[in-house]
Amino acid sequence: MDASNDSKSFEEIPYTDIKSFFDSAPSLKDSAEIERKLEEFMGRNSSPSGKYFLKAGYAVVFLYRRGTCQPYCRSLPDNPLLECFEVKSESTIAVDPMHAESVKRAISDHRAAVVRGTFLKLPFTTIFEYLQILQLIALSMRRLGTSALFYLAAAVSDFYVPWESMVVHKIQSGSGPMDMRLVQVPKMLSVLRKDWAPMAFCISFKLETDTKILLEKADTALRKYDMHMVVANELLTRKEEVIVVTMTRNIRVHRDETQADADVESPLIKLIVDSHSAYINSHS
Image (cartoon, rainbow, N blue to C red; front, side, top):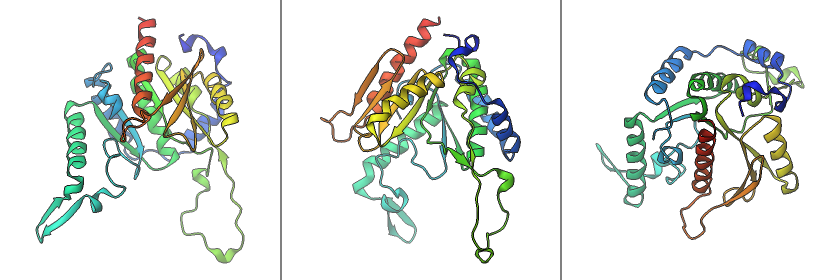
C-alpha cells in the first residue's frame, strides 16, 4: 500500500502540536555534521547491503541514547572498561583472559562493520535531539523507497518539559513547593509514515506489564499509526518471547532455549527481514 495515497488508515495527524514541538526545540548544534554523515552514508548504501541487521546484509543507522548498550557489546560485562582489562605493569594494560574471546569478537565485528561502511552511530541525549535526528534520518532515507526499514525500539517518554520552561540555574528549595507542567510528546509515528518516509517498512514496539491488554494495545498502535508490524513485549517475559502483531496474524517468537547465549532478537530479526523482503517484492 502506498501510504502517501491513502490517508484514511492514519490517525488524524496533530500537525499543530508537531510544528509547535519542533519550533520550540533548541536547534541541533551539529545538524549540518549529522546531515553530512547521513548524505555520505546514504551515498554508499542506496539499498540493503551489510549485530543482526548487519549480519542480514543491511546498512544500519544506529540512533542511540548516550550511555546505553552498544551493538556487539551485549556479551561483555556491564562495565567493560573496568572489568575486561587488567594492569600488567605501570605502562601495560591487557585484556583479562576470562573476557578475551568476547572482547576480541566485539572489536572485530564492530570494526568490520565500520570498515565496510555499513554502520553509522548517531547519539542523542534529550527528546528534542532524538526527534530532530529521527526526522533527518527519515528524510534522508526517503530516497530508498521500500528498501528503507525503521526499527523503532526506543522507549520515548509520553511527556516532556518544554524547552522554554526549563530553568537555567539550580532550582532553590527555599522557595517552597514547586509545580511542574508537563506537555504531551506529539506522536511522530504517523507523520514518519505519511510524510517523512512514506514507502519505508516500519516496525514499532509496545511494552506492557499486563498481558491482558498488551495485544489489544499493539493492535491499536498497528492500525492507528499504520505500522507494518508491532512487536508486543510483556515486561517479565520479553527476553524469552515476543509477539509480532501484523494486519493478518500474530506471530510468537521464542528464544532458542537449547543455546545458553541465544536471545530472542535473532529469530525476531530473521522474521522482520523475511517480511521486509516480501514487502519489497510486492512493490517491485
